Image (cartoon, rainbow, N blue to C red):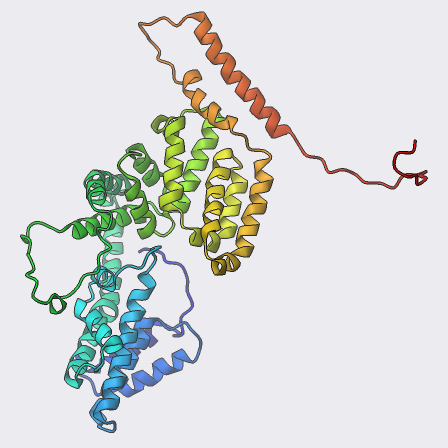
Length: 468
């Protein structure tokens, strides 16, 4: 069974939430109508703090509205307004948490990811912006469909997931030899991800706005004839969503050790054709940009300090590495995420005080100069903290680290057998250059800036300037 992180919930036990489920959906169990008692229990949970999940609160609100509608105590307009507000909050509460991109993603796209029918988004739009509210019959139907969606995707799905996990756990106890290792699953997931990369890169390069278009329903197309594609041919947006699903699945498998995923991605990365893929992964996978920077700095330190051939060095030369880092800063780094996790980025720079780390964070700071004054004030403390860390590390970092990175291949990875005989002068020059850079780097790292010790002079007589 998958272990999950502990979180605070308002119910005491699983039996208590099961009881609420049977009360809110009493008609599904053929029991007496106890919906009002279920709503009262959820209100009790809500009074204990902000720990009740949105889906539970929404379910209780929708059930409460159906009870009010059945009682007939409210007029039609009041019920329409109440239904409309509840459905707006239902859609917003589901879709807003998934807005993790630097740019706003259309709600139709987010709804498709959650398998929420798109007409809920259209109903939300009409209830919010149109002059007249939807009809009471339409709102009643939407309320019933929303409760059914919540049942299928939360209340009943959680029970089925628990049964599947118990069944899976039992199968593992009966036959442990049939379990596929996590490493094997990770390799397979990474392989599927790598195979899908070139096609997605071509789609993104052909149209940079693909996947960001707002999907408009047929009711808003007017007299324009819509050309439908063959069912067997997925659209570019669908191909990108499929790729993102593959990438997230591989990332989920590599969550405990994302280095394998990142190294496989970097091995095949093409600085000429795949910078937009870099942006897509950074937008759709929350911590991808941080983990990628951490992996790059780690590989760079091993290459420079231990003089070992790494995946980073085999993939990128000095000029290619500079271009890759530039693309990383331009397409993958979001200053808001950097400042939101300022302590984590500062710690990363302390752990890897290299010239490359200084370059990455310095370019992030430079991007903030063009921000509006309001945002500069908002992130003033975070910017000052990172600048202070950069000042400390910059005294120990040197551009000569890039030269050493470039020389590593000359001194380490030489062919065992070669038909071309290297002259002694060439070998001596390569060795001398590498040793010179190493010595220069070692002296630079050992250099310390000692603070001046100011003391009062024991005997001092004031004299005017120019007098000896």
